[in-house]
Length: 116
Length: 118
Image 1 (cartoon, rainbow over the protein chains, first blue to last red):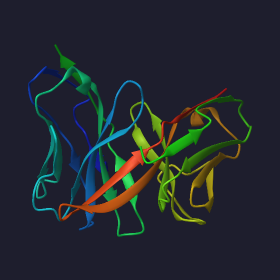
Image 2: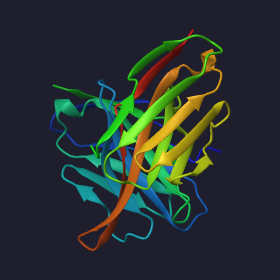
Image 3: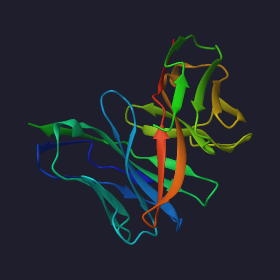
Image 4: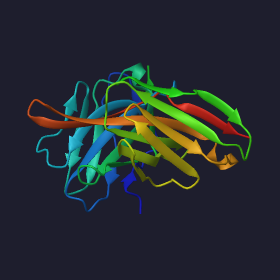
């Protein structure tokens, strides 16, 4: 079974609009972390945001927020006020395991295109 | 960018030859990782290290070995390269810190190595 599922292979959004990228996860570990990364066409992987499984509040980093719904096992990324530079691949990832055995699992990604 | 470099950045090799990729970091991070990225698969963990001489397998470790004799270097070796190992290889480190009363983790990635096995 897929541990990280990103069901949207591609999405379009109008510049200055908000967009939500979906991510669901599957784990029986009570301690885990959830991450989003951006990969522009140049190829580098850029960390965006992190949410710990015990965090009560949704994480925010500037225009990025993570909509964490633990019971539904979802960790959607919300980008507010989209910019042309947000066009990229976005990967959701999960870290499972107790401290010292960190393994990260990535989804297959969502390609976002921001339209002018 | 956590001071992560990878070498070489591009390599073309022939099937059956050994290949070693190097990841170097300058900030004394304990955890280091090797991933491969292929279309339709996202990033998949090959091996990771949680200290000098301490390594473990990821989900796609067959055909790969790793070594970490110093904190700053994590080497990935393809003992006998095959065409199925043509990919982009990323090295990463992870760190954990507290910020504003909350724990914060992240992974920082190197620039990647494009490997073509003919």
